[in-house]
Every structure is written in C-alpha cells, then in structure tokens.
Picture: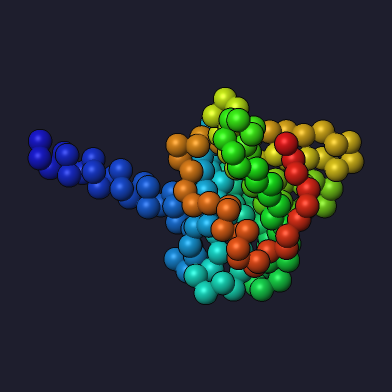
Length: 167
C-alpha cells in the first residue's frame, strides 16, 4: 500500500512537471499564467535574464500557439500593456483593468485581468479579436489558477505602454 501511494505521488508530480516544461522552459520565469475554464493553459513568460518575452497557449499535450517565433530582444516590442485604475471601492465604482495585447496578422490577442468593485467582480482570460470584422471571442480563465500579475508592467516599462481599454 505504501509503495502504491509513493507511485501515485510520483506520477502526479511528474505529470505536473512535464505539463509545466512545455509552457515554461528551464531558462524562463512565469510573468503571468492561468488555466482557462475549459482546461487549457495560458502562460506569459520571460527569459530569466530579460532577453525575451513569450506567450504560450494550449493543452497539456500540445502548445497550440506560441508568440513570437523568435525569442530575442525584439520580442518585447511585440507586446503592449494598457491599464486603467480608479480607486475608492464601491462608493466610487472602483476598477482595476489590466491588459497585455499582441497582434498576429489580422487577429489581436488580449490577455486581461480585471476587477470591478461593484459586485466584487474579478475576471481573467483572453479576448481574441478579428481585426477585419471586429468580432470577439472571449476565453474565460479560472482565477483560482492565476499565478503572477500584469500590474508589474505599470512600473516595468519592458513592453510598450498602450492606451486601448477592452472593457
């Protein structure tokens, strides 16, 4: 029985390790990540030395999208951070909106982390916007699986500062 428990623990941790390795390489650190409500994983990582930033999305067995293809200093210029903060809680209808966006051809991807004081509404996820017809697909994330924060980009100007708000 004791051996069975050890085997189960080993398999659990090895699966977690393998799952993470496709999304976070040994030379990378997680800036921000979460699982979507349908079980997929989104990660925004950087090289530990700040050489590059990379977005990955997919299942535990398959990275469906990695952006950009070239992991070098130029990658930082392909992402844009925008935010809006209004404090004061419910009385002031406080909000904290954070977005990291990038574009591939005619599609814009927006990672979001938002808070609305009215209703204590927190949301994380990804918006995929077709720039030709402006149709949007929203992929909701599971906030309980969230790691890291986008807020650090307010002070770390590694990526471009944008003005567009998506809520």
